[in-house]
Image: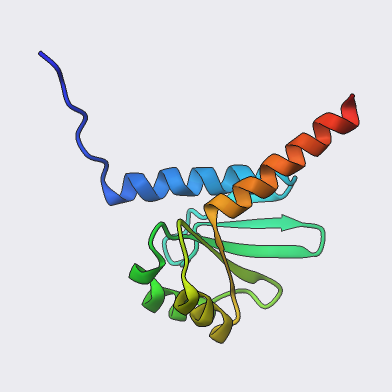
Length: 125
């Protein structure tokens, strides 16, 4: 009998997305702290010297725009909100600009991470 894997829950999909996102920040040597506090509206913080970010991972940004409007008001003053999603369009970019947060795709930050790793390998040769 062939056993089919059950479809992943939304929570599982978001957790996998968060894990992918944190790996990229870690590759850039950021200190990453996963948020355990349920009252935080972001998934983790990433800090390196004077750069401090609160990061929200949203596979589909259109489903969390209302939540992001609330999160913006709860961010510590010395942090910047970064929202990572699978894909964005012009209206998403306009939304991010209007609320002054950074919006980037997971694919784009993965490319940055790969370029960094390749540069480190070249330096070590």
